[in-house]
Image (cartoon, rainbow, N blue to C red; front, side):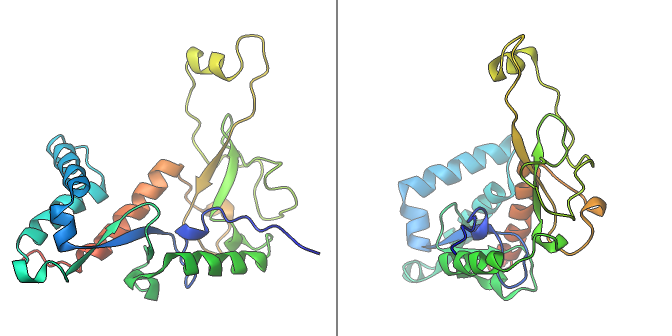
Length: 225
């Protein structure tokens, strides 16, 4: 008998420790400084930092550009910088003590996670580092967690944002039953009881993970070098 294993977020989890992480790409200093695409990306990051709305990645890009500008010309074709980038070839764990904090082949890391997911018991709390929730209530979506005994179906995991009348009309209109929307609640992976964890929205969680990864990456490029 064959069984389909969901690949969702397997490229965002450390197969060594279970910690979250992000994909990154390695770029030579010469390409980072000379590529029009990277120049535009850094320019947008500078603008965001000037307006005090930068993400951790954008703040890192600005600092990285300053560091790269100090690299001797003869070393720029061989010196490499690592940058968080969707679809990147390197996975970096947000757990600083993990071997994966130094980088793993992203696709091999994802493949290992698929294998681990196939043998993980859904009644083990460590299986759940994200929980699909009904967006209208913030509670676990019963259909998505059906059969698991460790998910507290009646506990509110996410704060529900109040919808505007315009949003309600788009989702079903007055007099119509709105379609159910599911959104994920996220927590730090671990074996602790799901009801005792701190849960976050997707946006807040992945910004937090990005910030942790950026702190690890910054240690590769001393500011006084």
